[in-house]
Image (cartoon, rainbow, N blue to C red):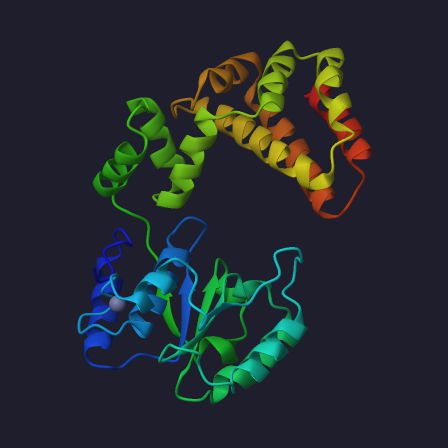
Length: 319
Ligand SMILES: [Zn+2]
């Protein structure tokens, strides 16, 4: 099986295979790259490789591999609290204590930090203590979109695995296999917009095909360009919870920014996107994107949804 489940990144995979065959694995890896670049896939594969009992690791077949790949291995521990913006220091301290309890069934005890850059400096200093001199079975996999936010003292103790975008041919074939019905325009657009990162391209194509009902209504109202039409869409949304409002706003932002970029020659990702691009000027579309991004920031800052929807109605009808 080796590392082929991670597409592209040949040099990196080769490097890992050589380290594995020589038994020269590090106890701390920093997996860096933007959203959708394969950090999570690589982390699962690495965890499997470290626990695998076969000669050629990761084999993908043994029970250690299967558990690690499916995220069910008791000795592959995720350290995160998705409810919190910052990873609580308490979790890092618990990890440091847990590190001295021997692995349950694997040969290693692997701690996976899915968003290491979201540790504050206190958390990072606590982590530093764990990674300085762990027991021989202790391994840390730090995933980060923004590795520059980690302390230099942490980075210097990690082997950094930086994920690269995929080449066009590889990306196109991976996307066509997953979205056999997508038009070549939609594929092309997703490839360009994703910057070559498969996960982002998949998200773009999935969004393009499945607009939320509120997004369809928004697209129509926004094209009409009057406050009354927008009010009819936004007023019922005032009753939503913040966590329900956020994905809607994200999709609207994506739709309007895609419409803005399609005006500079990129193919539009769907009929709604095309219609929006035709209904407004570049400046108006940018103004709308800013208003929507501002609304997302307010949502994250716990502003009330009624306030956010009211603000959006004003800003979007003036754009
Ligand atoms: Zn295996």
